[in-house]
Amino acid sequence: QQQVKQSPQSLIVQKGGISIINCAYENTAFDYFPWYQQFPGKGPALLIAIRPDVSEKKEGRFTISFNKSAKQFSLHIMDSQPGDSATYFCAASMRGSRLTFGEGTQLTVNP
Amino acid sequence: DGGITQSPKYLFRKEGQNVTLSCEQNLNHDAMYWYRQDPGQGLRLIYYSQIVNDFQKGDIAEGYSVSREKKESFPLTVTSAQKNPTAFYLCATKGGSWDGYTFGSGTRLTVV
Image (tube, rainbow over all chains, first blue to last red; front, side):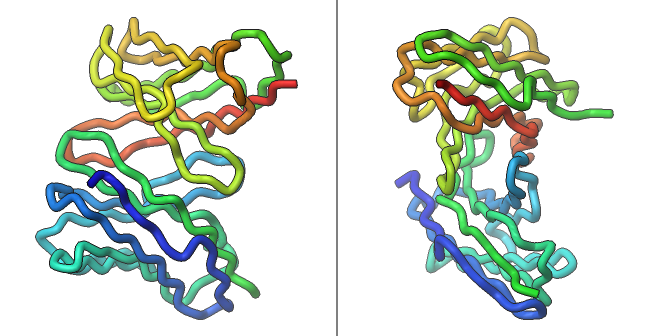
């Protein structure tokens, strides 16, 4: 009930391409869905987050798509750049509670 | 400059020794968390605290201990009972109910 399943585990994309990372959850009480970006040797940093009252949120080249009925949400990175190469974590929580993280996706963007 | 300070960045200890990792924040956040990350792995919750003088076990608390005597500080002790302590340790804080986590830059602990 508390799990968040993330896929793929690793992803290789060419520069300029679209990177897509997917997450699925079971707990319908989750109401906050953030994505974190982590570079090697650094702590994760909040990238973008969405709440279930909207189906999409866009910030620059990063977009979250949210499908409440399917209990799925995804991160799209448009025009992927080598500097986007990092590990991405999705997460979910109920208001005020701790975050449940996905297993992470290692993204490599080739020049 | 608001943020989270984890120190030291790298830490080496001999097997059987206890070691304490520091986490200090000046964000005035109530909640603080400790995570462990192994190479190529996700984030596993060790302990968390939502208020001073109170803390709860996470998913992998065995072999670890914490204290929360001040709002700004949440030190983690890795005891000799932890069977495989070599890992990257991350401290995080959370402000309001709708806020995400803010992570520190981590401490890489190596036990030899």
